[in-house]
Length: 133
Image (cartoon, rainbow, N blue to C red; front, side, top):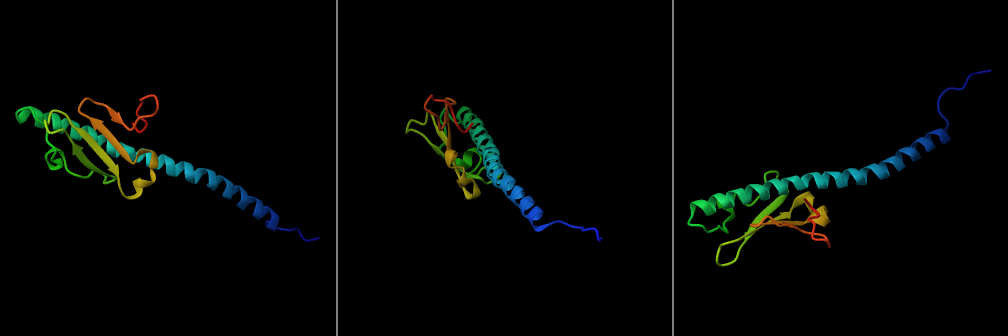
C-alpha cells in the first residue's frame, strides 16, 4: 500500500481559519497601538513649544507670543500634528494646540490635544484627568 503524503483540504482550511481569527484580533490592536505611540509626537511638540514660550516671555518684556514660528513652527517634528497658539489680548497666558493630521486623524479620541500656560493638559475625561497624555 502506498503511503499518503501532504495535507488534506480540511487541514488547510482549518489552518487558514486559525490564521484569519488571529489576524482579525491582532491587526486592530496593532493599529490602535501605533496611533497611541504617535501621540508622543504631539506631547514632545507641545512641551517644546511651552518651553520656547517661557523663553520668549522672559526675553520679550513679559509677554507671550501667538506667532507659531517664534516658538518652533507649525508642524510637529514627525509631522503627525499641526500646532497652533491661542491667547487673550493681554498676552499673559496661552493655550497650545496640536491637531492630528494625515494618518493620525484615525485617532478619534485624541484629534486635538492642548497644553495651557499653567500646565493643564486636554482633552480630559469626566474626572478631569487627561485622556491623551
